[in-house]
Length: 427
Image 1 (spheres, rainbow, N blue to C red):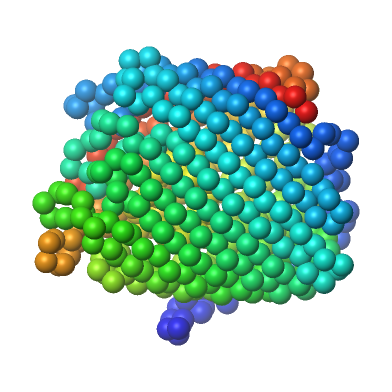
Image 2: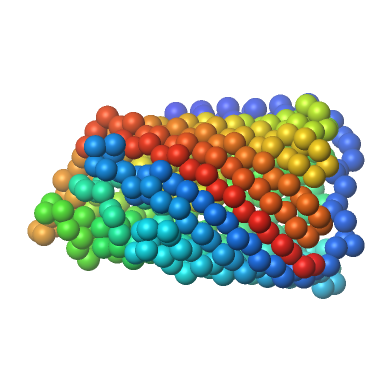
């Protein structure tokens, strides 16, 4: 392993001192009450959503944006059941999506996850979880000479396993974790984004009080891009493998009954075999502040520095390709929720992301051409949900996304969206 540069050690030492000061300031207090156990562990249901997008393919204004409406029907099922010290859970959604005019985009999809939280008699505990997803991929990826106007199906599989000595109430918890992720696109133009990644994390977690948890870990990862883009604009089976190692610290602090801070900051060094300009050495991480000034109003502010090919700091549907193919993405996200009544909630979302892009193009002889650039994505959304009964809910939201760019590696676009959904569950 390469030694950590002095500047990185200073940054990490400063973060550690900050977290230590938080520990000194944390006040003891009762944890939040657990969710009621009276609910049934099983559920079965269905949902129907109707939406409209003013720019389905996320193309620039001069290339004729196409708008369309679509309907998505889903069947839902799942279980979350404790068995002794263990907990078994699974969630399944099978979807059918149909477009009004762009019938070539009609697709069948699914989302499935299953896992086990396990625990022995006070000495060891852990989690095993797997997920599979098939859906219509978001459009607007960088690095395409022309915009894509065909169906592009995204398939993704993940597996995570962790083991720790002790339980959630233990003061000190050594742990080790393993995770894999495989991502595949059906469209030829997107296959350079196919990716396989495996990572191992080992460290120790410290819980000095009921309100504060600190952790530090070392991370090793290996990955591969099976396909590369060529100088002629095509896709060739020229694998580009990479390796990375780093260290990270994390914290979860309930500062008061109304305020909570959590986050993860790490230093990573990553090296590619072919596309060396994508090599990365630097800080990435997530800092999130949840603030509930009143019983009905909640704000969540997130600052994210995300380097492509690292662990996902936010769900893929949250980033919406703002990180895909980016050497570094800096994002600021603000979420707000107002519980207007016992059954009606209003939510708003603002997101700003700035990407530093690096596009490696591999020629037939194995040489590499490197281009760089940047772009900025802005997203706003406003919605409301209505819990009509314990088993029936409905909601609508409107959104607007726009991108500006300063290079030829991506293109600008604007899009307005609206979506309404009705869901019924038996549980």
